[in-house]
Amino acid sequence: MTPEERALFEKRRRARNIAILLVLVALSVLFYFIGMARLLRA
Image 1 (tube, helix red, strand yellow):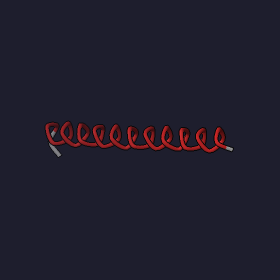
Image 2 (spheres, rainbow, N blue to C red; image 1 turned 90 degrees about the vertical axis):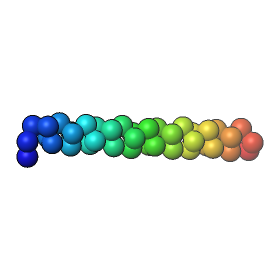
Image 3 (cartoon, rainbow, N blue to C red; image 1 turned 135 degrees about the horizontal axis):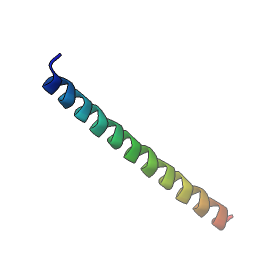
């Protein structure tokens, strides 16, 4: 694997990891607000 290919591979992996992180954070926030809404309604 050439250095250019390696750099491209690492850049794509970093972008994918950031996307997964954002999805996990969004789900956590969503579940938090759903939980708060259920607690406040009860």
